[in-house]
Image (tube, rainbow, N blue to C red; front, side, top):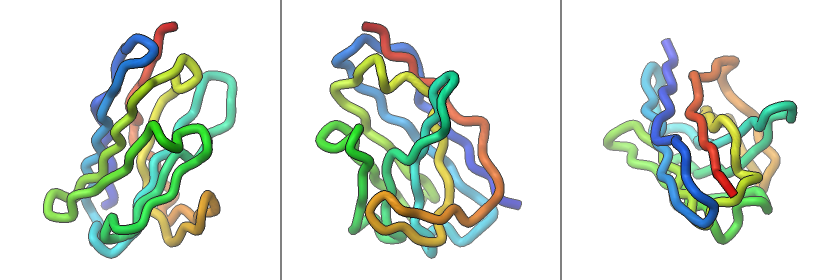
Length: 124
């Protein structure tokens, strides 16, 4: 079965950095685009970033452009999100998921499954 395990979150001061990781299993990882999403308290979930199956093509929400970098390692079945210059408004639970496709910030999630997420808290 599909498993997505996010890690790497924590408490960081504004301006700091974190690197999130997502370990995937239960499907052919290298065949699919992957995305990062986040949900802040009291808000709807939102798209953060996506990477093509090879990692050669990426897309970002405006909120993270220039600060966030998505990457993947198909040999390790892992996708990463490097977050720099963090802001208080980046505080959220971050999730990864498998994408059927994405185009810009339009996407379709493949599996009706979400991992436990990883909490990112940015103090101002």
